Image 1: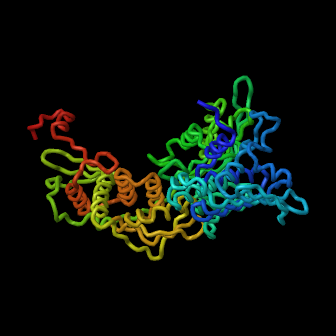
Image 2: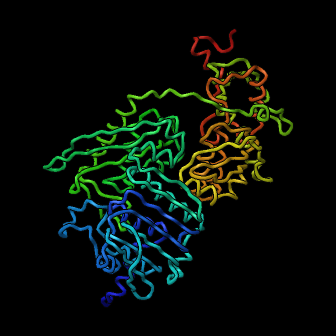
Image 3: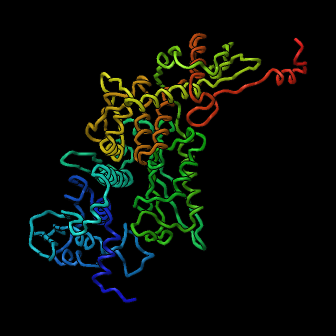
Length: 547
């Protein structure tokens, strides 16, 4: 057992801070925000290991401060050494030094003087004068050039940029007063105007649908924190329940300006929506929560991805109430536009005999349940669940043979996605093609969809592509593939209130009976309930053998 020398300790600390390109971007963006920047521009080449450049118009640094900033454990963010009084995005002094330890770094800055300063770190530190207006530019080249194992452990370039996009989008949405732009390989991914309005930031990141179908909130509450009281303010944007996502990653929260993952607050937001959310769906919500610095521990996580809240339950209750009150005052009516591929789904069965072949269609109830007579039983069939099972097995058969055929959309459709989802379109292009999608980024947060899965017809539900991306981003496994197919089968399937004529209803029953597993939808819900004659007879106090 021996004590490590200071150089080794510093190198280990550097590795804890800089684990992938997204961490470099986060540290540099937070430095820019703490410097009071009104505009932050991020440029990324490839997966971020080639080049990252962050430009801001913040306070900048003097020549002396710039030279000191690249040394280990230096900071301007820790007032009087009091951790409880930190009101910036962090006090870490090792960020620039840690980055410089695993990359080639150039820092160009000016605090408003006649001349700026350029500090280069590449084996040794160089300091020169430079022409630059007020603010700071940091360029990082050849990340992990001296850490080959770390570089080889990174994911595919598109996946690494997807992570960068998601992190930058979080800052852009939750700090709408700052104009934030992200460029990738010379192409602008998105840019927010810095107007201070959450809806403007959402328009830039998510597109018109979220911006149009949303409301803002600005609320405050007082909570007890031990023997003190603290004011909790909640500001942000809530998309209407008509705009949902398959995963909870679009519920974004900032605490005192930093985007963080606080499960208690995310759950509070979803509870605020209450029964307005469809089952297994999550809202699009962007909330900035502010508390006194002493009520928040900003440094409980090595990479600052979460915080600890004093009186967390009380804060969560305040957030839930703010969300519920905001949604209670808006008009949440919606209109539906769902395309259904009934013609193909109800083609005559020409293979195995139907397991429901002796079922005779006799009627319907509430345009949701089909009633059939079969061997002395009354069968009640959920037409949506039945149509889901049929579509699911058709999709599965297609993908196991030659992949799902595509139907060309003319003109192509467009979808407004988050930056991370746009990056995922590129990262999972092959998987999307196998599933029948032909799509590509089209600038900003827009994706052009040229084709969709043919067995499902033209899918009008805008959440289909998003749901597929959400599942793919979790990794391609057989189980996830089946989940994908189940989601794809759900959206175009019959819904409550969709009318079938008698011939279509009979065809649906026949096709359901021809399925391998006709008695459950792909999500596990039953498709058929059977009520025998004896049960009806007992209910009517009639002997089952008497007519």
